[in-house]
Image (cartoon, rainbow, N blue to C red; front, side, top):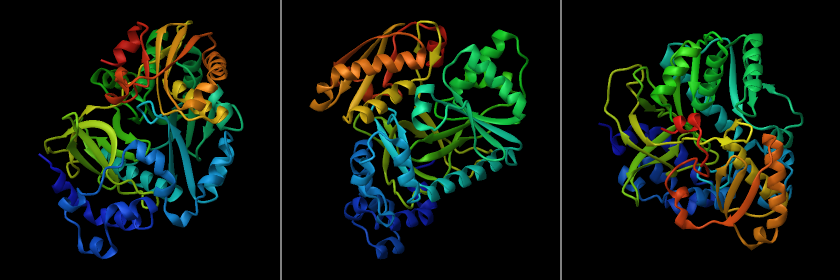
Length: 448
């Protein structure tokens, strides 16, 4: 059985560079209590444990202090662009930085800023693991299936294209909804571009396979299939293997850290120790929680970051990734779908996007949110927000009705209520900022 200290000692050479980079961060320089001399001489795991945890709230509130001073990032100038995301993106790119807006996975909006240099290192390590996992790098044209809706696409991009070319070999294909029309376009695209390997969430691939099964379409053989963003259940693995010709590889990742783990041919999850140092520690609820230190984020350090997953160390075993520590995930992401009145299914990211637009459009803060679908045409939004939000409540309500109609093509009866901690959902599960109370066979199947 692996243990925290054993893994720590094996990765300290890489960790040392991260800790040195923290000395140029206003946030970390004071909180770590470290010097360059101490770092070079070696810090024991016992000393490392004295470093305070970084929570999502602290990351959100102190992001501009965490970023290395050398980038000269001006918080006021960044926020002066308001709802113009393209100007924000241009401003950050001019400084070698990139921003990604996420849900925070627990219903609290989060902007993640990374340096372009660190992002390149993330993908370099992932390619090393892919080579170890399948003996070579995946060959031929690849496809990244990306969940987004047309409303969001119009806001974040200059055009409304169905796909974007990443490089000479790869494409991003936008999945706006789970419908026969979208999957028919996707299948034609795969054949036209001669796609050889694909990366997507398990639920997306399962819904695509379900479309192929219903339409009597013969299985399509990819040379490599990679699943991310959600837990990969055995029944999903079987269906993906049946319809796409190869057993999928599962990638363990987060928006803040990127790639943390990869499944081996025996189905066990291994930590990518080039990318992340993982600790498994008992939390306040007496559950074993994953705490991560990124080993690539030299420019914007993330040290002892609580990502909200629960896991236990696994037993060592012989496989192509046997040199990497093994974990057993106990709590990871699982999605409910937004079900429209016409029967179409949408990923819960459309709910997250709605909150992002509200913040930008009305310049208000949203601390926490939980959206509950209690009928095919009805949504209840539980919101924790300051007074400025509630002053705009009527305008926000009208915007939400417009937004969900644009996204789904259906009209919704929407109510906004003040969020109460007694609801409890946000503290216990990832991707539970949206809960579907409408009975749907596929939705229920995905979350079992």
